[in-house]
Image (cartoon, rainbow, N blue to C red; front, top):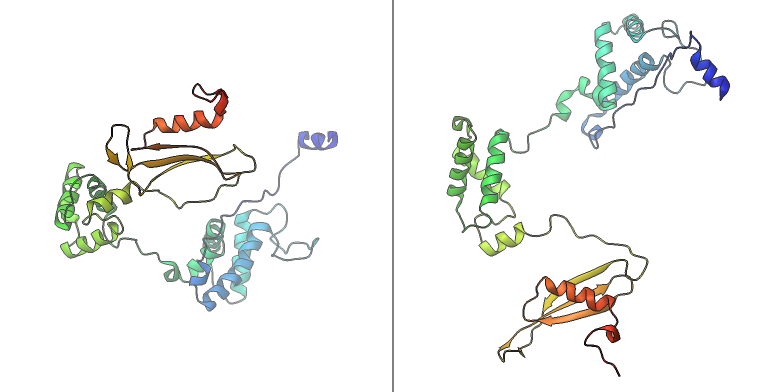
Length: 292
């Protein structure tokens, strides 16, 4: 360790090469290129790799670099040397073009080189066509505003979208045609019941935002669940009125044990406290517990 510190402190110590972290490849993009495009991109990668690191990929350890690529050479000089070698092989290319390939390779890896060969293969289409992003956001807001109101038709939602854009200082002259607006509304309102049943719309809006998952527990009492369910029976309540009740229970996930339960005409938040009290307090220690 002392020798390493002495090395770092010497006046002529210099870092000649520092690896550069390359970005991850976009998933699935390589499959969008034709085989001949990928072949040319792989060929370019061999030359760009030598410009970056001074040695081609896959060489044996200890292999000396070729002329113009050795230690102490700059990336710019290696680009010029690579361009000269390619020109000698019949590939007319300038040093600036080699630099462009190097930058694209550092940004996007092999995909970046393939884009230079055929950029049409990865041209991305906008999710909602030519509709301005501000208009899409305004329509989403109009649909969200209608969750707690009475059911509106598509014409109202489009009108409300325009009002939101106007309130935000937008230009209504850039809006798409009315036919395009209705197609966009169908896509944005899919599954929201924006123009359908109010009950279904509110239930969907207030539902879980993600899929239910599984929880792994290893000890009793580590995780408890509380849930309520209405019982399909009629009972006589305390005030003498006949009605239905709900069963609310607390379950220990690890042991699958029902630790406490209450019957109520309507479940309230205070019932959760009752369940917790009954779960952690033995029956004989409760104020109303049996003394026998």
